[in-house]
Amino acid sequence: MSLIERARADIKDITSNTDGFGIEMTLTAPTSQTATIVGLHTKHWLSIDTEGNPVSSKNAHVSFSEEVLQTENPNYPIRNSDGEVDLSKHRFDVKDSTGLVKNYIAQSWRPDETMGLIVVILEDFE
Image 1 (tube, rainbow, N blue to C red):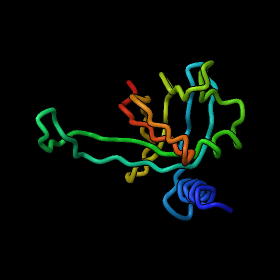
Image 2: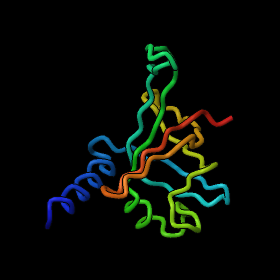
Image 3: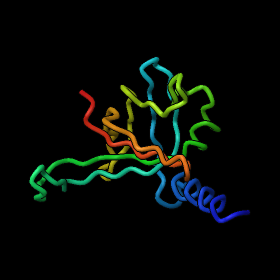
Image 4: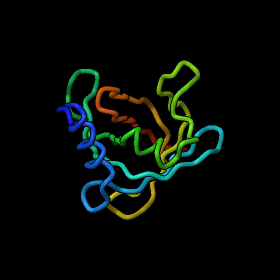
């Protein structure tokens, strides 16, 4: 196994291990298709304003292995017709440290197609 293959396997294992950092989340596409996977979730109250100053503002994101999503939910629409990751209007429901499920919508996404990891910046779902 090459070093890059090992790194991809490690990312997959780290993000999808419920005995480690992984937690269950439910994704809902605009087409109403759903997927339940395990990934990482972070929510904290530190952000940076446009002047570069720290401010108290909610910052939430999830990270997950695209391979895990595709393996467990092969029909979930993660890519658009051009083959690009497109999570526009996808919803993410995930528990935070309080044990309550919080509902978010994808604000932006950062696929790492070298490692197979997708990071999604979230905003509150209204």
